[in-house]
Length: 154
Image 1 (cartoon, rainbow, N blue to C red):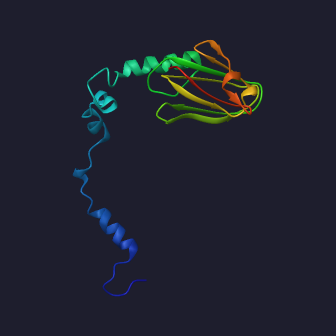
Image 2 (tube, rainbow, N blue to C red; image 1 turned 90 degrees about the vertical axis):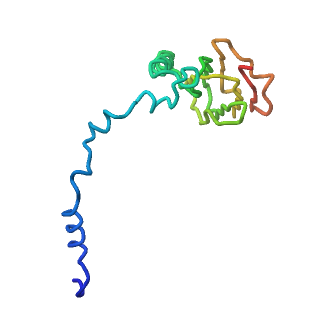
Image 3 (cartoon, helix red, strand yellow; image 1 turned 180 degrees about the horizontal axis):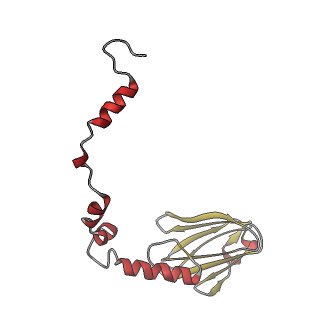
């Protein structure tokens, strides 16, 4: 119960609703019609900087057709890992940005697609077979104490 001069919470809410100006609300369809989605998505009209939505769709189709997980916006280089044992995998850009990191289980495969060069750390290299663009990668020269550190795509 409210004291004299105070407005009860329920009355305050209903009072605000009654004073709502219905003309200030635009229908969603009107707002959507006025937006240039091409520019909103790309942010630029320069196709080299921001490809058209069709180019993005083609890139997505490429990733889906190869079963690859895209880790950079551009690029078609493929890293394929086949795991015979549990292994931690980190893939970073040369600038040190994390592109992928996760623990992978024995019996699984992982395919990543993007633009290198890639810095790769394998937590248990004996449990992994790695190919880069379809070519096998020898891990032994890059492995110490079962951990491999290598750079591919330079």
